[in-house]
Length: 542
Image (cartoon, rainbow, N blue to C red):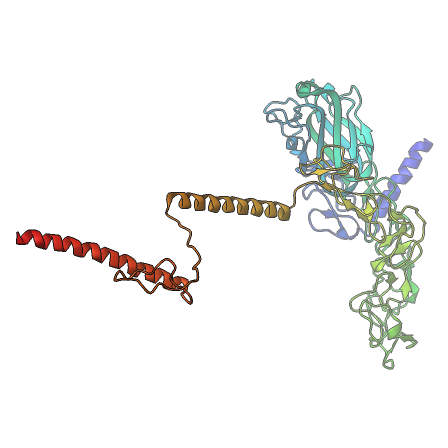
């Protein structure tokens, strides 16, 4: 009986949490606090609790009467490194068809073993429950498979049991983008009979503002989702809510973010005016001289460079993104605060454990080598450096795939992803590279290849020219021309007109020599012609 009473109290508390402000109507398909939650079951959910009377929308699963569990693996990119058997593609396991009879080859089947299957969720998610459908009567192909995250075989979050009913639900409590199922098997091309044979994989997360194993509890975090299991918020609560899970409504005398504002401080036109726990709005209006919905601002004329209710604050002392010595009476920064500061006039540093723009980041969400509770309220920098796989001053940026080490150094030229710790290649180096990390280039450089090629071409051309010269000389088509020699011209040249062998060729250049040779040749030809003509004439006289 005591247990029943406790359950009744818990259910009542949850109902009160939702109905404190649910005295208004939401548009179709919405429900809950400020109508900020989606039904995910068409337009038929309860406007207060979100309970669905019908089926959930595609990709959503009902639990606790709500359709707030989303299958984030649906239609995402799936792959395998062990090949696919015939037309049993990896994408068949995330196509929304959970049929297990295998007809039409709607499942995935690896070609060889060891075998694996991976889905890319597109971004990091806090995971918890995974449902796997195996092909009917072939569950043994998936039995004892390991499930790990982010392509790290050492990060095993679940193992499928040896025998079970179909489908099987496993708990994978971790954060990741890539989810891999791996089965060792006997190995080899013929090992497809024991390789993975998966019909559908469903990976569930709660919709924003929902937590719990069945995604049936509500949290109201301001700028982030709450923890899937605990419901704790990393930052502030939305207006109207307070406590670590942001699941407790403001009382009747407080309102705003974390319920930090007091209703009594408002300047409403009617004392004790109703106080909206979200905005603190005065439904009767403000007293003369006071503004804003909650009637907490008064316009005054401060001297230049000052602001505030008593004009005691200096505009230049604010930590605005764009510093200025001029401001209005409120001192608000038009473009917001620099990192590490908060409030509208940016004069209050982030509270302990928070840092960054609008103090929206949590110190304990970093991936430092050491994890102190507090950190620099501006940068959140990790003094001792980052854990492996993370970079950035605050160690919140995950290294991209294909990098390793604390500085996310790019992997070498390996045929598979290198080890995230030391960058060693677990597979084979690509052609032209060697070393443990496949980062030693042994290819011949283009410059060296060009020089060698040019030298070969030059040698071949010289050989061809030399050979051609020798052939021309031997055939007589090319003759050597002797250098002109000096001496005294023989004056007794007769009537032939020839130049004696020892004639003086002083001051006769090569061109002159060629022209004289041509004259001599013409005279010889003419002399022979005259002899022939004389003989013809004599014969004609006889």
